[in-house]
Length: 40
Image (tube, rainbow, N blue to C red; front, side):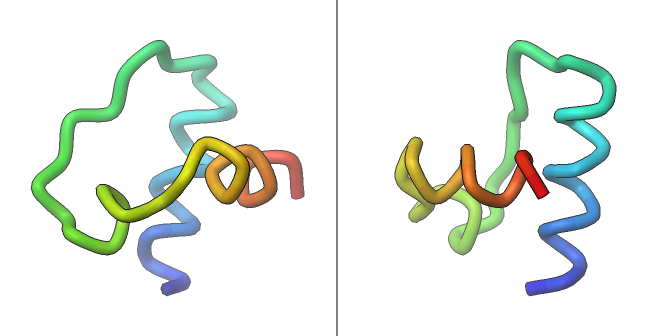
């Protein structure tokens, strides 16, 4: 979801240690999926 990608990219750019969310799509991401989104 592009809206979620933007949030994840922002967190990666800020080198955030945590992301607190209730978004079910984000909660379902595995670490590997999260890493692939934030590396692009």
